[in-house]
Image (cartoon, rainbow, N blue to C red; front, side, top):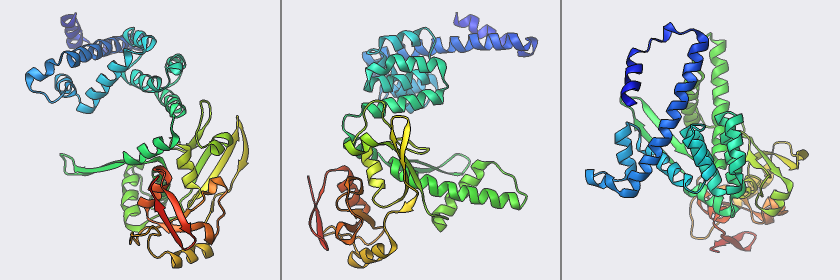
Length: 370
């Protein structure tokens, strides 16, 4: 069969087919590719189980699969992760074996259904009726609704932050980053403001380049000049989830253009950010707050004078301090001098995501572990 496939590949002359026949053949080949991908994933899982990859001195089954397929180790690891998850999801496994799912679709469904098995049928329907982006959005909603501990989810997103830089073979500087959603929303808003400014300047000057090129210029401008306009973050959250402190299935808490986020993250954004909060009740928007700085200028100046360094005792950090409500804004805390202080980002994260508590009195607050 493989020999026949190789012969077809060698002898195929696409221009000899009319458009309808080309479409028909393409769809058949795409299904054959999905079938081969399913076979390959199951065999990769068997190779992992038998540990035969050790015989050739590979560091892991993923490294063996990557070398055998010419893929990256990350791609091979995802293939193995999907194959393992399929063992607990028979309906998705059957669809994958039948060639109805691509490897990417299967990975999205298994990652979400592993968190909430009751959503498997719905996700399989979505895979057949919507685009890959639509499936990914649905899977993210399922994973968000299945998070049992909202604060632990927020803490995990923060702990897993990372950024890497490298030089590609052509000598170009490259950058990759993963951030918690609140940090990502602030960064994205500031970055896109620079992109729009540079795009407009280029159009006025008669220059036309890809938007991706302007995005690269905007990164340099953001690093060297800072934000070119106030940062605004838009949050949509169900009123019940905001009051409860976590979402349940069917509820939403998401940042515009970022996606589902922990309610803890949304609450933290209310402390010291320019935010527009849309509160939902079902499908109805019940309240909309206009974007505004939650900390008035006079109060901010008073806090800067009272807390020139981080308010947490034994911390002398005086860079990039953040204003924090002692009693959170989302829990009814008042925006006043007696309920606010300035702390560094490290201690702010300890308070927001790791359960550290504020003790003391105004002007002499401190943080203690949970």
